[in-house]
Length: 271
Image (tube, rainbow, N blue to C red; front, side, top):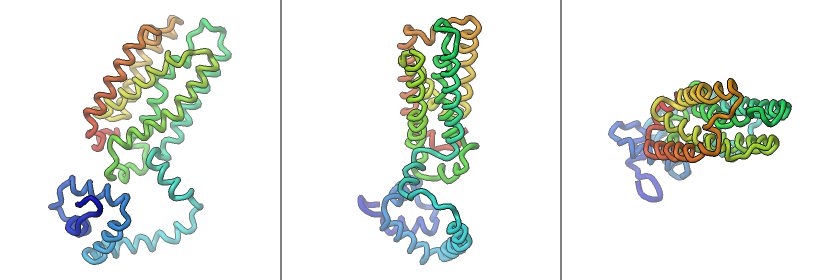
């Protein structure tokens, strides 16, 4: 494939479903087709000429769906929908709403609590709240379009980072507002929050993002939340002395994600 357009060999072989095309060529062609209308038109013509059965099947499916699509509720403009689909999935919406609701509940309990001596629920929950949204955004069972997403050439690290960023963009401002309202310094929970998110992605390459998130939340609840609530004393992990450790964990998680960026294209990472 040259710099501008795909070669005729690739277009014709892809249309026929030739098995002699190597995986890298197929990936590069699919990525190129996303942004090149000329090559998409060439591929359509090649399918019509070289694979009439596929063209007939596509036409039959489109004829069956056309009247249903015409009667559907008007969707947002295509450009806006395409941009949103590159960063998020509809399955994330209820999970993000749940995360925000838990944040607001923790804020409310902090504001009506008996006083500043009480351990803040905001501090206890903030480090792991985004992890729930990240797990939902990359879960195979929660994403109804998983098969379509996983088959695209950009379904690897780029997509998981985009969905993670979309979670953080919604959750962190809410946590910042809650911290400001309760007088809690952002440094006390922001670094642990980012460290947990990076470790979720790092472990997700081994056991799946959803499983990694559940495991880290369980460890946090057992090691930090339960002892803190039992003793009414803030755990050492949430004090200023623990910030360098959280910074090291964050750097370690980011390093593992970069080093193992290829594993996010396999189905196991969606579990």
